[in-house]
Length: 233
Image (cartoon, rainbow, N blue to C red; front, side):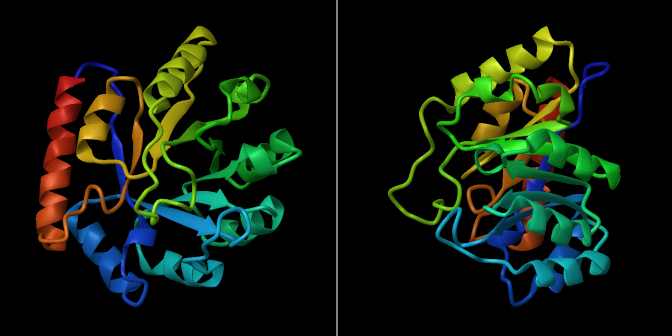
């Protein structure tokens, strides 16, 4: 890996695991070598789904050594931010589209020692980041409309790569260290393509984990891919 190159973070998605065996599966992920778990919290209003309860996630937190990467897809950001802070996450983002006071909420999250960022739906323009980019530790770019990944006809938007490339240029022009994360049916092919555009954090769900492989086999394949890709960057 080139000197000063950033390591890639491939975070398995909690929403893709069997919610009846979260403790066992997160333990397996940790033993296999993963260090971060992506946690989606959806309120059923922002998107028509509610797969995980905040209480379950908070109870899971002390039972695993995985760092929580929390993505809030909710209308009432303040309530859910405070609830998820109880899980001592490593980082947390909320959707810019639903927050009237993003600067204040970013500061609130960071005061708790948590990395803070904002997430953008596919069609939300980057210009909305103009006055808060410097306040963000990371930006989450959605490749698919949030909460709709389970719908068969919903596909990744064709302009995602252009949006990520433009965001990277915006970050570089300002001399910032803001990182970019992508989410939404991210495959290993996407990891390779978007890493070359400057993305460092990737949410790994069903497009990365193959159903015909065990957890150990999937982990070995994914982590080996990550290590080889890091050497090329």
